[in-house]
Amino acid sequence: MDWQAALIAGLGLPAIATVLGLVWKARTGRVRAVAAPPVPARVDRATSSVAETDAAATRRTSAAALGLDHDELGADATLVQFSTEFCSRCPATARQLAGIADDYAGVRHVEIDLTHRADLADRFHVRQTPTTLILRADGTTTARIGGVPRPAAVRTELETLIGSPHVAS
Image 1 (cartoon, rainbow, N blue to C red):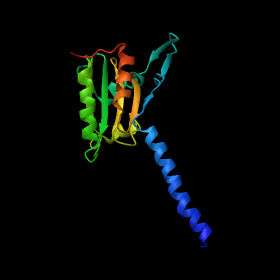
Image 2: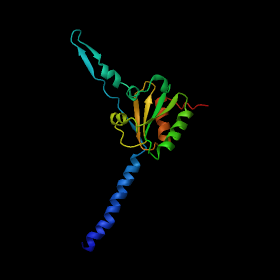
Image 3: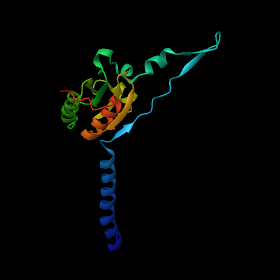
């Protein structure tokens, strides 16, 4: 290898790695809005009416797919955190999200360990832990955060979802 190729490799590879790292850092922890999935329907040929299938009814809300019942959801919103036993950032994220949930009346934090629920990782396309979902009161997903969430972004999303800063006293 001549010195020019070595110089290009020696300077170019770290520069590319730095740019990729900065892009990754800028994307992680940001709130991304989630569009509501369309609910498949079936047509009853006898009456020509559209009826929801049983499978569609179970896919209608993220809470149902997660196995969360109405008592586990917050009155206004729910922060669902996906974590694993070996995630080093998950305990701090759980404390952070629990603190945010405590600051708002009607908001709850639920942590789901994917170590024992790999089916949920596949269903919700979780590729990193922690991953956080923000659910409405009806259990539908409004936002998703990959990585450690930024507290200000979570608070802004909750205030938008709830309609005002319902800070608990």
